[in-house]
Image (tube, rainbow, N blue to C red; front, side, top):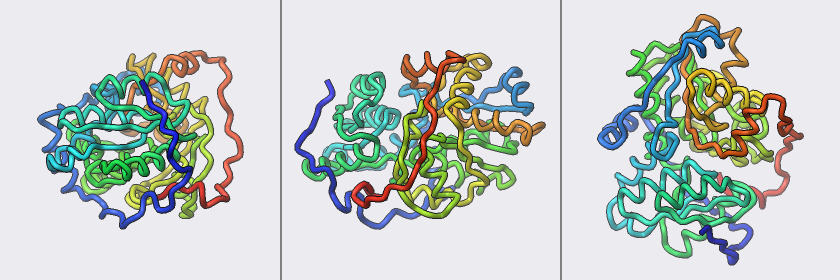
Length: 361
């Protein structure tokens, strides 16, 4: 059963202090691929004439939803755990998540005989919580959103002497996620005009951008975030770093309030960054079900949502989409499949005025 830890302070200054690691390189991603390949065979890169017809493009979809934990994040988790020595792993791993990263880390920790404690915010998907537990992790419910849960997890790790792992602030994680792009280029022989990638904590976008710009510089990389949680989008376009309110979104994995400087810096070479609405995301979930017959969660559907919005601009091109995960709960799936169902509309998203709500960058 999920635990509630009530003796944690509401804030802790400098909860993510210290110098950021160096940006990853293509060599880091290639090393990560050698680590994970014996454990994780390449996921399929598929296409379907109906999907290509709807977009007016030659469309290729990377199916990361077929991973055991249902999402791409197992790549970085294995690369991270494999690089730790036994003594470090025995300290135990603590993290925070909205679901997919917690599942991936729990799965990887089980492989390497390390304990895993995962903090999740209140109201997190019960299905994702149950999956973390089933994969060997311990769940702690704390905080009103991901960033608050992360802050609590850091303090808890300090108190028990465990290793605190943020989903996007370790180069091993980013390099592992970058293997998605490495495989895509191999599978389509480097012939992609545009590649769409969703942004939650930015580890995938940072890794993908690094690989694509090194191996296929002609390929445009477009990042996608939910309209209801646009912190990264705002920071990338304005070059102003500040937390922003994250409203309710069906793309819960993209609901980041505090942009991550580390991954954001590696995303500067993106060719574009767009937002998609709740209606757009629900339409993309339906589209994947109708064409590829694949289950896709909100965050995993965001790249397709963006491509559908840009179909006139993309006509005739070779387009890559990363279906990052399929861990959608029943209520969200029902909502997405009901074409006429009302969806949450975005509210104003002002910058947070209080420094006490910044849980580290």
